[in-house]
Length: 75
Image (cartoon, rainbow, N blue to C red; front, side, top):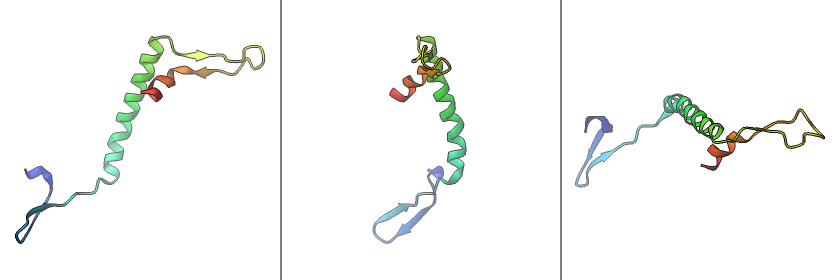
């Protein structure tokens, strides 16, 4: 119970837990984890056949779309 935050006792109602704000620390930890999960899904998509596609080969040959990002977006 010690990791749940400070406890404030109030009259008859019993203990009331205060929430601690997350702050930027959680975002700093979550950003690399989210990037790692995203890259994992993109890697799975590339292994299953998704990848670079040339939608307009005769009209705009330098245009490439990476369809591997559609799997993590869909999930």
